[in-house]
Image (cartoon, rainbow, N blue to C red; front, side, top):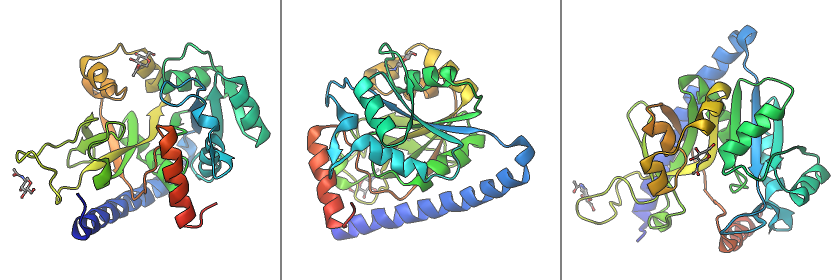
Length: 284
Ligand SMILES: *[C@@H]1O[C@H](CO)[C@@H](O)[C@H](O)[C@H]1NC(C)=O
Ligand SMILES: *[C@@H]1O[C@H](CO)[C@@H](O)[C@H](O)[C@H]1NC(C)=O
């Protein structure tokens, strides 16, 4: 159900959210420059595994002729807050492809159960020490570099920071699109595959600014180790959402709102959708 007034409201909401994030970002950027003595070292990690139950070989899937992982990497390269960017993978084909377009690659073990574990292992294998780790999931190949910079700049506020954007009316019922609710200081209250909040009418409220979680998060490097080692929690297991473990253990998670036309690629069908979107806008 989508009317033009409802989508324009969502867009307006997203823009004001983005403006707040940009204003906050500018403040933090000044702070970062002034305290260069304490400058923190930031690494971006793109975890990529070949085996995926829903979409095997997903990172190598061509999107308008270019592998999805390359698109993600090229976007991430444009972020100004990253001191280093690496792809972490357990797969030789992915490693060779990434080295082919110039990426630094770290081999991680096949036993990593999820992206966080893969980032944690990659971090331990690096010679250099980093203070902040940004986990850039390869399934958002059109991620804007400004969003990466935004979560890095929010990092002083919490051990974990991530981003959301306006949920499109079409994605309300899609369990692959994760919804989020935040408190009035921008900290996450909950994430769900179902629509939150729930309106007592049982209908989607066209006036409510529902939020979609994006596949990007940054962690304090010490916290990343803790995070990967925290045992599973009931809500995390029920929703199959790793980040819930953080909230269930009582940690704060900072959420920035950004304006982003999300095109998460979860299935082979999503590739056709993103290609159609790019063609419409003459993106190559
Ligand atoms: C539920 O949604 C309707 C519109 O569909 C809205 O008017 C109402 O304020 C919302 N909240 C409650 C508590 O009904
Ligand atoms: C990810 O791996 C960690 C172990 O390092 C585990 O505690 C956590 O529950 C895993 N998350 C999911 C969603 O499987």
